[in-house]
Length: 433
Image 1 (cartoon, rainbow, N blue to C red):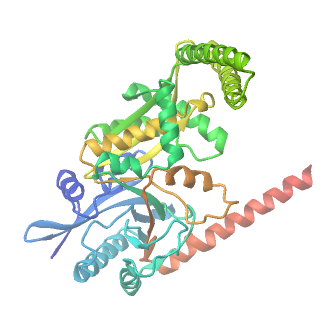
Image 2: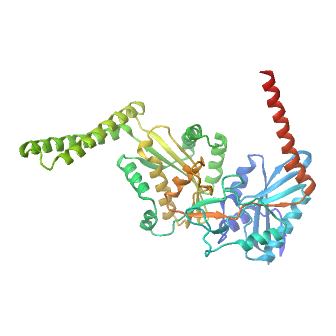
Image 3: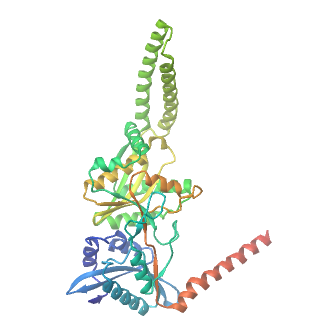
């Protein structure tokens, strides 16, 4: 085996994209180039045997003061983890490579399942597991971040994965009943779903900004999304799905349904008058409730129609396809017109797109393992759960330290110092008030 540095990006991409088990967009040169614009330096490493790549890893270098740095292989390494000798060899070589470049450590967090879990995140004891691999990594000198339950590590340790190479009726059947109902409702409201272009990133960004304000979640800057789209679009790896609602058209549909219900009510009242209302009161009450709801919806959507006479994009979701997998990465929804359930239809449409384009697994890119009712992230979990993916727990994040003294300084002493300084500054401001 031969350790290789500076693997040509075309060769690297071909190997990663076509790897049978560990292909991941976060190990692609596309993500490497995206990260370069965020101040990180990608390094493309590999192992060749008889001239052919058998392992690869893109390490992102973060520069630190005094020429030091640390490295991270997001969702790496890309190799056969059952091959102990290859894993040992690559770990040792990467460690030497990082050490020579004044790196304090490198991290990996492969998307390898820890074990099967049930809907409540409890391990299925007689199911498949990768406990042996965890022990192997520890024996090689890696330090385990731990079995975190939320988003404390670099990447989510839990996700939902939808098997999209099944027949479409089977995929759709795994959606929850309420999800199927909301998708039908969005279709009845005439929500239009299309795949956008680079020009639509502005609209996407406005919706993510609205979602950030509403839910207090992290959002990238606009330049990140435009650059991300531009880079991944070069290989045809990104799609932007947009859901647009037309309130004026919805009002017309409501008026038509309201007219029908009022006509039915008139006939029913006439019939009730003729026979004294025997056995018809329940139908009358039901029809009156339906009319009241339609009148309420007419007022609501008329107001929306006045506000958005030409219609408005209310949901936007950015998807990455790489190899035989897809990932739902970023999404934003409008403050208004949530009653149309456009986000459900958009989600359904890009799952269907994945199914129709040969994608085997569709990763919803992160959920939680902490399912307590007071967890503020539980709503995100419940939404993703509704689409019937397999609840998945990964083995987690592992750190390989290459400079123990400075690792302690930069990861323990410096953060502690900053914490004390910030505390003193807050106290000083408090005393000055």
